[in-house]
Length: 142
Image 1 (spheres, one colour):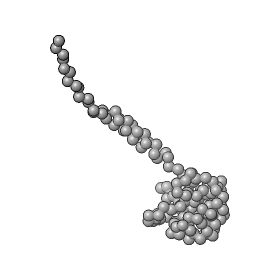
Image 2 (cartoon, helix red, strand yellow; image 1 turned 135 degrees about the horizontal axis):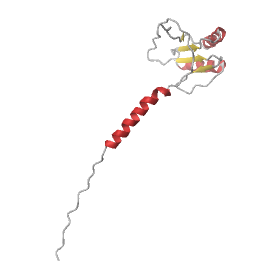
Image 3 (cartoon, one colour; image 1 turned 90 degrees about the horizontal axis):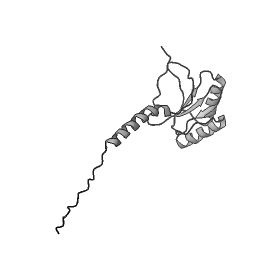
C-alpha cells in the first residue's frame, strides 16, 4: 500500500482592500456634503455697512448675539448656544475676561433689534470690565 504524502498548502494571507477603499470614498463624500450643514450659530439678520475686518491674532473672539425677539446668546467655546438673560451673559463675560483679559468680544445684533437693547448689552459688557468690544456687520450688497 503506497501512502500518498500530502504537501501542506500554504495559507493565503492577503486582504482585498478594494471594497474598503470604496466605502471610504463614499464616507468621504457624505462627510463633505454634511460638514457645512453642521455649523452652529444663531440666525441674526446683521445690519449692512462698510467696515474694516477685525484682525484677531491667534485669539478666538467671543460672540454675543441679540436676536430679533430680544433674547441674548453667548458663544462660549463651541457650546450649544442657549438663550440667556443679560445677567447670565454678563457673568460669562466677567469670567472669560478674568481668565483672559485680552479676549476680544464681538457683539452681533439683529438689524431690527431696538437700539436700547444693544446699548443695554454694551453697557453690561463694559460693566464687566470689557474694553475690547466690536460690532459685527455685513458688507452691503451691490
